[in-house]
Image 1 (tube, rainbow over the protein chains, first blue to last red):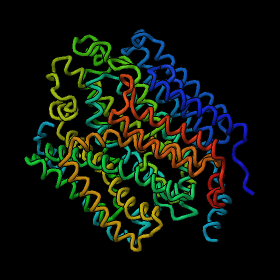
Image 2 (tube, helix red, strand yellow):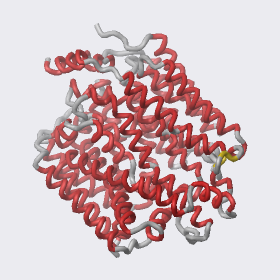
Image 3 (tube, one colour):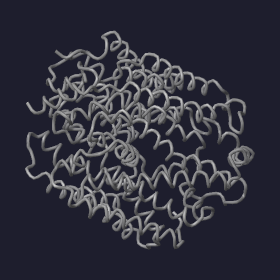
Image 4 (tube, rainbow over the protein chains, first blue to last red):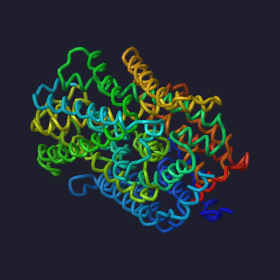
Length: 130
Length: 489
């Protein structure tokens, strides 16, 4: 008997999130609603990763906050906001937060929580032979 | 593209072409069976896999088209790249491990193979193969045309036909001789050149523009560009950059030229490091886009470069006028590398669709896959080259929506289907067909969209929605025990 990696509740939550994100990006693009498109686009990767990752609650919550927060900030800042250094604040957030922070979070989490036990791999190889 | 008439550029281009031809000769003897030809004998380390994936993913667009797009629409174009912050991890968490483990329990060499294993449906895998073939013609055709343009400029060849033919002949030689063994090792060389050139050109471009602060203030104070150029949504309708973020962030899950590389990793446990290698190398490579995208407009604003007649000349003009010979030579070799590394992946994928995937979908199997694979590689490449040369407008159109076709057609069936047992063959097929057809219909503007809305944003969302709806509607179905074990490992 093969056990589920993810609890049914987590899976249901991820699927509902994914369905809402798909609806938001669809309607956002077709009805010209930047907010729907931005929020759907931010939630989409979080929902998909939660379907595949068994133990990432806090990382995913943080990823969601960063993506939703940054895209919302970009939409809320008129003309990119005040200057921050040499760039508009919005552009600085895009380049120096929206790219590196998710990279560190998600790629680090993958390296830290990657789970493929030797016995699982052996079992799969035995299945091939049989 | 202007003629890059410098001796070192010619030397670098010739050396590069000789090196990839040499790899073709070397890999000929190492390609003994179909497994070698399609998945490089499944013998790669994680760094090689990561760099080869990056090289296949980034075409010449990153080096030439990207800076040109930034020159045209401003920093909002960078939304195409912003999602690389999470895409490598997203690939890892959703598809990389499952695809690689499928290759552990079955002879899975292609994405349609994986679809067939997961759904036990020849209709679903056949639909995936058709989507791969459509996208391949577009992607390969545009790469071959771009290769002709760069070869013409770098080697001073006058005839466009001769330039395309020469570039195509080199790719054909090593792809046919060594299949994916040659494809991957040329990708590693190509990826390394791309990384070196990206770092070199980035710092040189910032220096030429007077440093980051000076560049930003020149652009901001110029009449031609203005502060709007630097704003996150700049001159474009807001839907466009947000659409870039979504399409390139999620569509990556359906790109066969990237996913295909995961089958080639020797030890699945090494996948742990793949997102760091892939995402890190992508981040470094994109420095060239950022550097040239900022420096060239600044140089125009400072009066050091005349305004560009064609935005796509941003990179070549910078190399001609500002880069030292050695860096210009390296960068031109890197541009050729970026184009060829993407093209060689598609010669292999297109051949696999013809020799392996479509026959399987029709319930047949080709006996000598290695021989027919080589023949099909020649056929697919020549067909794409001839079509590209004769119908360049059509190929340009196909090329622009190939990424979208792959994403909309394949991402849901793979990313959701490999992680949720309830997804059925009917749902996967419906999603693949919805993605392929809707993307085509929207790209041809048969259904109008609001200004700035990307057709792929709609087709990708619709394809996910269809997969979820049909799965909930049709309920689960039996999955083979070994595939189930892969999904739960």
